Image (cartoon, rainbow, N blue to C red; front, side, top):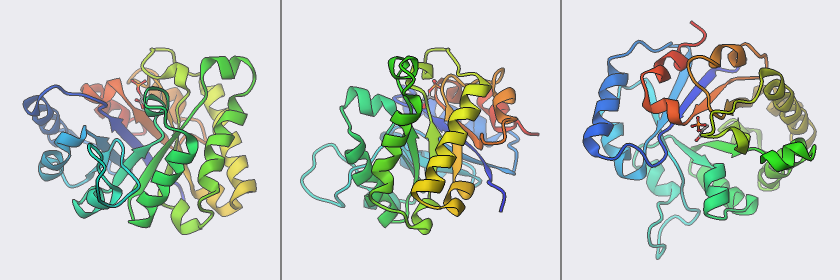
Length: 251
Ligand code: PEP
């Protein structure tokens, strides 16, 4: 089965008010979106429910994080169970901002991934190397070791059908520096090759591998034409009208 093109919008800690969030929702609701692309937006947790209640039904909602325990004394956390029971379909895990600023290890990301998969949430799993790691020729190793932590918790094809891998080189996130189409294609092929060896050929072929890092309306076309680029995770541009152009890149 062909892999369905996927475009996610990560709002990060934006926008600043419920009113601004509502304006964004209204903009999406009034836009024409390619029906062949799966569109998922990830507002901050405070705005998840109002977004879910007001967004058009063909756009899905992702949380930007979750905790692995289902409930209990974990002040400030939101569990995968709570997300699922509230109608949220996706969660972003392993984003480089969480790895870097909140010291999340690959093992911790894997624990949360397991919890999300166990309660039927879909996971947008972010992996990617720093500039230093790329310059040292270690990009592929870094990405593989981040993926290995997930492979260690599950090789179940049913679980992997609920994972979208987002390749996000840290040096391209929010910097305006975009990886070239060739760099992205090469890394995505490397990820697929790794999944074929570590999990299975079928999982490697069916898993969607999307790219994130300074994607905008101008640079998305070249990237989208790469055979192993199955979509995008968009940060900054997801708050702007050009997000619609990115969703419609293949129209
Ligand atoms: C992101 O936050 O996942 C991201 C890719 O950000 P940006 O598009 O702003 O680089």
